[in-house]
Length: 83
Image 1: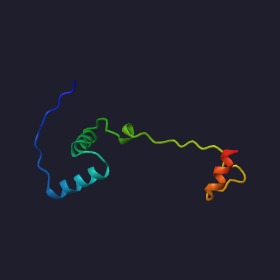
Image 2 (image 1 turned 180 degrees about the horizontal axis):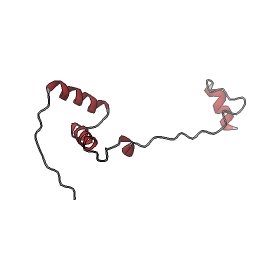
Image 3 (image 1 turned 45 degrees about the vertical axis):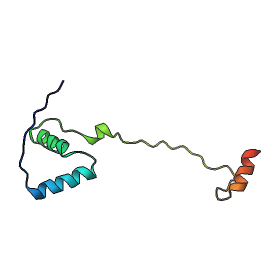
């Protein structure tokens, strides 16, 4: 079990506003920002968003619509499907 210690830090108002905005834009917390910054500054392993949100690898294959299919005409598409 990892233990955490609470502490109080004084931060200039403008820096805190900027940090809150950054945290909101990146869907993280001020606590996480401070922890990553301290780890980076102290040479430890920095927390990575990629560890939480893996990059999506899109798989594509050749293909397309069958000949004669017009997606803008639903009635014809339905007729084709009912055959």
